[in-house]
Length: 208
Image 1 (cartoon, rainbow, N blue to C red):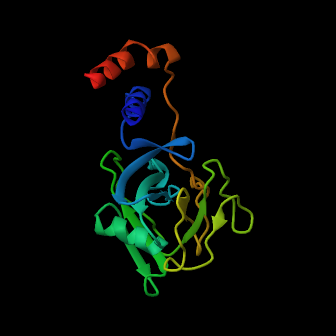
Image 2 (spheres, helix red, strand yellow; image 1 turned 45 degrees about the vertical axis):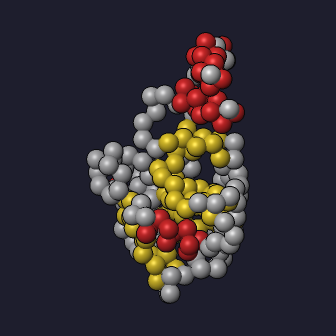
């Protein structure tokens, strides 16, 4: 009953929001493109191409993807799951320990697929705080990864961030070097509406 009620409330709050499905995670609604895996643990991966993929015309520079698992899982397991499901195209090096590139096609974006123009130029980090400042290596509210993909353990309830940078060149003026979680702000909905006749009617139908 409670799950059904929350689902109805979420639909009402986000009616008219196109694209990914808003998912409540760490106190915020995140636009999650797709989920893979199953289990009691879950994390949300945020990949931010920082407009380095399609230049200043880039519509959405970051996208979020959900992953669920049981037991122990590494960052490499998560990326392999997205790759095998056909959601992301992930290429790695050094036996799968080093990220080379991530490709993603959003059919609603007119300027082409997301794909970094400089392979291997990424920073990776994690946090449980959706409002944490990405910053720079050594000066960030995110915990930057210091090991390879095959040694970085996933933790339930964390955001995993993968942020495009330029190791061998300078960022163009239009680029943004800060990872941004695609958080959805609900449209204004009055409490009276949320608790009014529609929800009462739904609950009444559930009791029949």
